[in-house]
Image 1: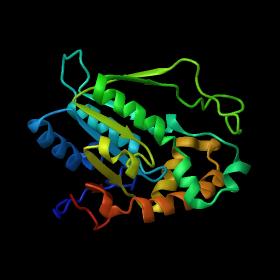
Image 2: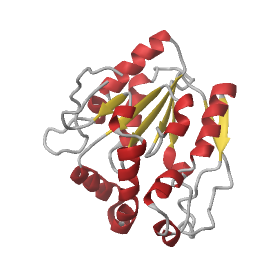
Image 3: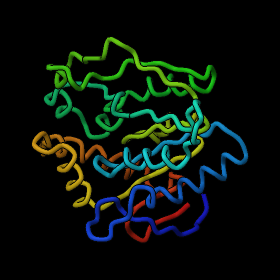
Image 4: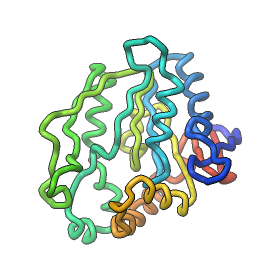
Length: 232
């Protein structure tokens, strides 16, 4: 990891706010350099809830897409599909460190990334967020499995996606950091009336532990944010 300074911003700072493509600029440049050496490149885009990881991933797809090509240049895997499930009561009874370790089923993520690296294809059953009983200890998974194929760039996006257990399958670990007030505003804009402050309260401490002790900023290869701590 070097010490080169970058100054991207947040996609939702009001006024002359940078676009997701501008925020993703240093990442896109880095990927183009890596792709010139060889592919595939496996990338984790990590960050707290509401930081804009999905928009950042979409910007990478748009920037690296090849016009007229039938083969995908970028494969994006949504980390939320690997939510481990469980009732609010169960999660509230667990220590913060255990919540951070178990909220995302990283073992299934590991299997998928391993399949993509070894076979070029992989499948998994996503968590069913539309299930009536999704907030229960009886974990609902979709009946129909999702399937992914390898591409020049494989992006695993979502909170906890760069956790240490996955490092041997990742080539680049990216952290997206934005101020708390920006994240909350983006969560409200995204979820609207469905936004739940109790959900944020439940997981904020777990994210504090993960990004403070498990994966602090100096464990990442690239940090994108809106303050003076941009490094590559």
